[in-house]
Length: 461
Image 1 (cartoon, rainbow, N blue to C red):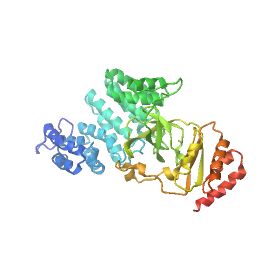
Image 2 (cartoon, helix red, strand yellow; image 1 turned 180 degrees about the vertical axis):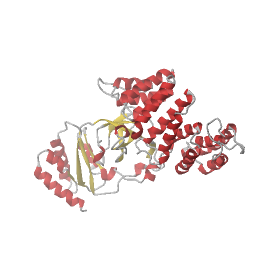
Image 3 (cartoon, rainbow, N blue to C red; image 1 turned 45 degrees about the vertical axis):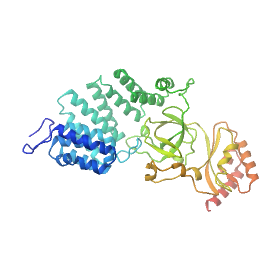
């Protein structure tokens, strides 16, 4: 027979009530929140065992697996089984859709789409169920669920995601959450002007301040380069900022870190939907969602470097320990402006650690020397994820041969910088800074060739 969820059931087996399932969830989920996975799964055993034949148990298990502390692989295994067993169980499908954002191998905005076929199968199953919906509310909820799964599936599913959001809004136009969710999708796809409209409509319908709407409105306004709109949002939320005509708002904040992507999600296509090279760097935070890059990039192909302005998402993907401070790390949404800094790689020799880095003090204020050998560290995934590790202690080893970048804002007199570096090198024969491309840019090909030969010799050491 079929129960009122549309699922096939066996009438000869006693079924669990919704109350009984919810009681089990109330006991198990606080344990999962405390990251005691095995205890939580033990508490969930009654509904896990019954889920194959019991629709209420299947619903309860789908509710539970959104908890990341229960372990990715086991949750995915359960989700696959539930979808296979209950393809017509609408209430369960709604919960599975909500869980998809936590069922990806990586929890980062710019991660590549999941390659597990479960996600696409779930989207197609929900699409089929939409055609059978018997009420406006159910059709709207199924479209919202479909939009969530399509967003997780990446750029290939953007058209389906957009259509599902629009249909859900058309069915329930006065529900602010539908407009907000659509605005969230538009933000991640770089459609910032449309994202502003969606979030403004959500704010109108909410009739009271909803912080998440304000955040996404402010981010979209910044991405759209609408400085006045961004200023209005952030000051309304209590931020102290200044706004110059034709610019974005700026205020004083602690520096943060941003995980840059060569191809952030907002600029990708369905044919090229992967982040490419990634690098976590320091950013001088200028507003709640944008800042100026203050690390010289180790990888040249990321397309961002020292001095550039980047937009980042509002929620940190994690925090990292730096000495006594916990530093938030944000996802790269898009690059707002290439600042046009002139950047040259160098190799050098020094008598002690930090000697070349200290040359920063003799450079103009709008120039810097960045020693990758001492400041850049490749860490394994486990170390990067571990919030107990003090990343400040990951300074480079003691090296007498170092490499890095010299960075100059537009307008800096490069000849004057060379003179200062030469003066310092003349004081200590162990100190040298070799920048062949800089000399080439100044028209001194002879010195450029000489320094390239010396750089090649250092590479052999």
